Amino acid sequence: MELGVYGLSAKATVGPAETARLARRAEELGYRSWWVGDHVVLPSPRVPDSPMAPTDPILDPLVHLSYVAALTERLELGTGILILPQRNPVVLAKQVASLDVLSGGRVLLGVAPGYLEPEMAAVGVRLAERGGRTDEYLDAMRQLWTESDPKFHGRYANFEHVDAHPRPVRPDGPRIVIGGHSPAAYRRAVAKGHGWIGNGSSPEDLATHLEGLRKAATEVCRPARLGRLEINFMQIDLVEVDADSALRYAELGVDRLLVYPLPLEDPVAVGTFLERHADLPR
Image (cartoon, rainbow, N blue to C red):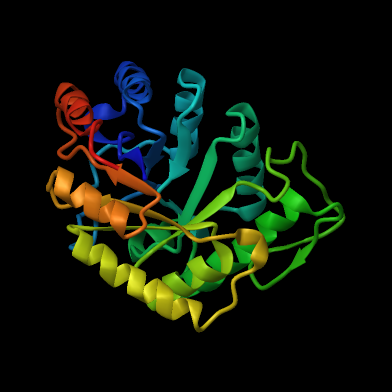
């Protein structure tokens, strides 16, 4: 099990100096991946489902990860997650391929459909379309990353007689990680993802998600090219990960355990948090 860091593109950690110090320190401490979330806009006034206040700063994930890529050499660069229906898939395919090339193939593209209706509406996407757009956009981007004659004709994406280079470093495109805790998300992870990403408060929460993934594997086919489904998990709710929990996560088959240094109000405290968790058993 590898350790990763989540969430350091928001609140008090958004500045260039803080980002540089924390990213370099994470790499020095042996963390293997760096993950960030995504909100183009946030509901104002705040709604119960919103994870942040409308005035909380959060950087664009791909811009932030490009900066981190230039500061580091080994950290994998993950979106956990990028709200896929809110992005143009042709433009996003170019952006992700560009980041992958410049980072030497370190991109882990985590995506999910999203759930905040005001955010969707602001970019002209109907909430009811988010699942269909997510599935189509994944297929459309893969065409642009892997096919010699890319083309796609769907309800939400449509192109042919075009091409886009450079391609991502891996011949099959960047590794795709699917986020979410619903039966539909589990099925999407099995059918379309190299990995799954989720969160919870304990190993018991993860065990519930794993059962959902096992059930999904009986309902949809998994292409052989995807290999084994990798498990990425983040413990949340202001609960620090202790040694016993880390061992239990490893026993459950977690590939990347992501620590989330909440609250993000003090960059110095975040650095101390990273140092405190760097030696978790795995």
